[in-house]
Length: 157
Image (cartoon, rainbow, N blue to C red; front, side, top):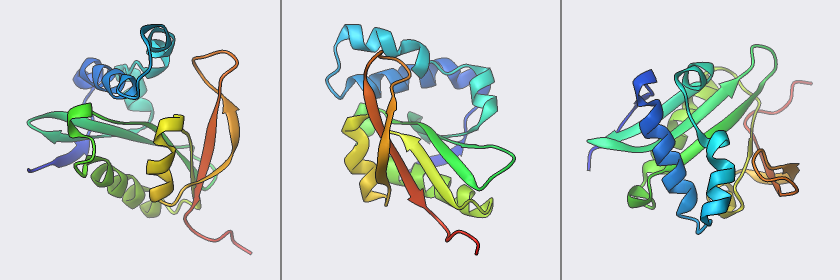
């Protein structure tokens, strides 16, 4: 199995949205929940341009992940980390993670943060993230989701 990791292309926004929705739904969420998440999971060319979106490709798109870095500060945010259900547990997530970590280290970031789907917490913990709190869901009113953090470099003295 050959997997290429490369930057996402604007014309892939629709296919990546479908991938994100399939991945999220594979956790057993119902139709109403998925409808509530649709806007938050929809990728557009503008959203793709706003962050470093990376894709895993093996013939077809099999995963995506985004590193968002503000110009100031040493913290990056991980977004839209999704693996097509047919590619889960086959090393795709690890390959995408390696690319995000390489980019974060190359930019001198001190930490990475993310807001995790509860089903994804064990995956992120295996990468070294720890839960540091909860934040409101961007899609479901009243739902709280884990906020996670990974310290990359010690804080300057």
